[in-house]
Every structure is written in structure tokens, then in C-alpha cells.
Image 1 (cartoon, rainbow, N blue to C red):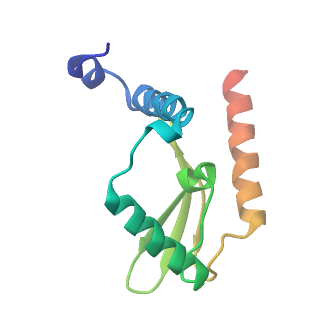
Image 2 (image 1 turned 180 degrees about the horizontal axis):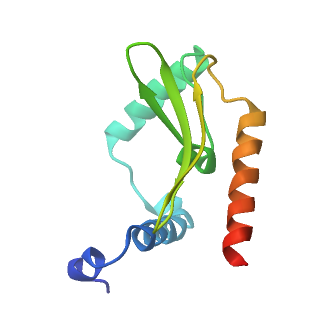
Length: 121
């Protein structure tokens, strides 16, 4: 069993990996986990917004890459990855459409692959 003290001493990367591992394990037996009633309410509200075209659903890998920042003149999308020793800023663009163009996602993925390959050299 991992203690609170051990968790506090973990790096951010180790904590995220532990969370993903726990989530993957819990997901194996979804029917054994009871969600609180408010989860259902939030999901129904989200489904309504998606159906109305007010919101879109992104897969987890894409969501982890994309941050949004609003200022007075525009809403910005920042595509990045936080590593243990660096934050990789892959692309910044002004939000003009509801969905991120696939070309932008492909470019970010290619940049990550290139960076990871260089780091393994």
C-alpha cells in the first residue's frame, strides 16, 4: 500500500502514471463502481450541449495536449506536453472553429514523435 508521504515524494510524471494505472485497473470492472447521482446529472447536461453543437468531445490523448486561454481579444489554443523536466509547447493558434483541425493534431503528434526520437538518441 502506498502512503500519503510516498505520494508526496513522487514526481509529477510518476503521479500521473500512477493515476492512469489506477484508472485502467478500475475500468476493468466498471459495473462494480457506483457513481454518485451528480455524475449522471453532469453527463446528461454535457450530452445536451454536445447534441446542440455547443460542445465537442475529445479523446483523452487530444485533451491532454490542448489548453485554452481567453484574453480580451481572442481565445487561444495551446498544444503542449508536460514532461518531468520540460514543458513542450507544440503549437499556439487563435480559436476560430469549434473543432481543432486534424492537420494541427497531426502536426503536434509528429512534433512529439520527433522530439521523443531525438531524446532516445
